[in-house]
Image (tube, rainbow, N blue to C red; front, side, top):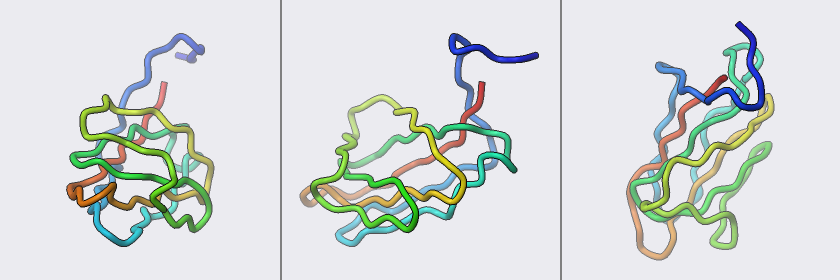
Length: 102
């Protein structure tokens, strides 16, 4: 069964990553959407943080803010890209990254 732009996104179990939110930038492992069958990832946090997406990214306090109170965010990723995270203020917790497909 194919998908359309209106098809709901669904998480793929067993492929997620958890990153610890702290004072230093920490990056995920590289994504391989074509090999693992996904086009995007859901991102959610248990503490306020900033994320950067790219090839070998380093997150800074001026990058995209993800709040613990935000619903999961869907982000497109390309092969080889990673997500880096750093705390917002003194917040700590985890950044949860789950691959998603249609």
